Image: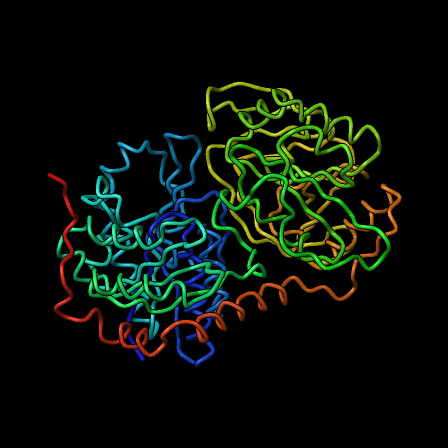
Length: 508
């Protein structure tokens, strides 16, 4: 089998990322050389690839579904929002300036060449490429400069499947409306529908799907059921919902649960770092946005941030900063990761105005460290040891640390110290550190001891195995609930000729 397919969605978070991962897993298990591709992603959840660049974390998960290491080719354009109106632009893994919504439109013509060239390279190197759109193709105000949805589909002649989230309601209208607002040449590439997150009696949905086919001339290629077991690697901060428990943790091995509160910063970055904690039996991880939620927490985590100084100001304005300091003063553990680590230090210096106006702000003073923002972003995939355990991780930060007292949390393979281990307060720039099973168990044991909890970390939890099981579940859902013969036909043959054009109905 050779070819390609684009998965578009009626909305953000409709299920594009997980469907692409599921399709990739299904094809990979069939022995097909498949690769993922997202021309343009907007997310502050990213990873560093072995080839030295940065891509969206969802594409790293999709690469794992294909049995591949992450590569900058899988996500050639990444937008990392720093505010509601500006984003850092990462092109082929490397930062290439900051843009506003208006100025980014002027760059898209050149970036279309980047994404089409990258996709062409992938198609030469792999039998099948499964592409993911961005947001919705029905954003007709953005169509003229689109490089990720129908703009890419037209440029590369890709058949398109549109997925809609029925759990939000109105999915049939969303699917019909998405098609109806597209121009005829775009509609000609939209070949079918997938309904996502369905729960209930399929017989009740069937008449609606029959009508949808009558109205659009396109079949529904399957209905994916709601699966509460799918929770890893949320594509963006929409997945970091306050107060709900993250994941589906098994009961504790000891008599008590360990409670982890993760501060939901406004510009949280790489919040998926805490997913590994949620994979542990007896660990209840919650995102929190107000101080009272820290009162009964055994471990508080300050995650990464795209705007560390602004999020630190928010932390103070909400009272969460005082709550974190009080938590630490009581001898209870606090862990800061990247931006969260920088907040825990004495001062943050931004002499070049990397985040905002040049200046210095006071940190929370819980760690003897100062951070200075460099203009150049530091990216790396180092190895080393932490708390006596071998670890691998990745780094994405502008901050350069000047450490004071206290042993390092991480010692790199070349002997370089990184982060701080101050006993009950830990800080590090390392992302993915908690995915190292032995290190994670040591952190949890320290938190349980400080809290006096009868909690025992499971000795057999493998985060890699948890992730692989999720990918296999996605592959199973595709095999069991989608018309895989029809999907194979679209991948190899493209969209059928003669698909009807649908007119949006106007009222007089």
